[in-house]
Length: 137
Image 1: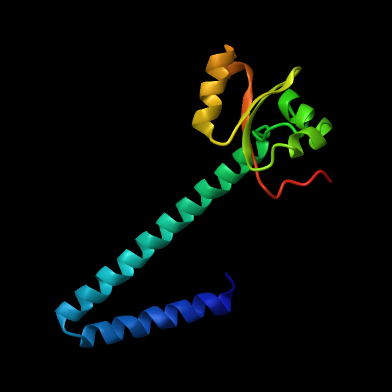
Image 2: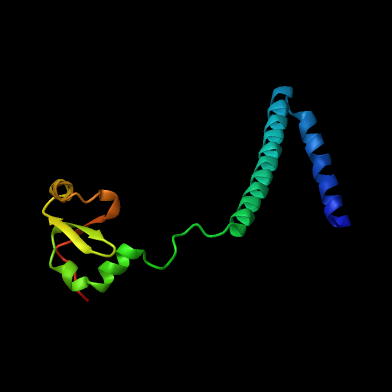
């Protein structure tokens, strides 16, 4: 802080003190309480900003939690056999990563029944709904 700023601060405080002496005691107390609250809030905001900056820094250091860009076996099969998948537009299908489409039905419940009837555990397949607008492209 340079000399001019210090001098301006001293003048401001001197004027404030002179004005304060002329104010009734209750108003002065209220003004002091407001000033103290503002200082407290400013300190709280500064602390919060430091915490935010620290969290941002730590987040940037974390390894990415996003899924890998490579498709899993089920997605790979569906991409490689898009024409076969397209034949089931508007239906639910059960896809096995090596056997392909093992069941197809109009509803999810019907598909589950079909898998149970065939003895295919639902943990071995991925169930997908193929929208009516599915494109082979």
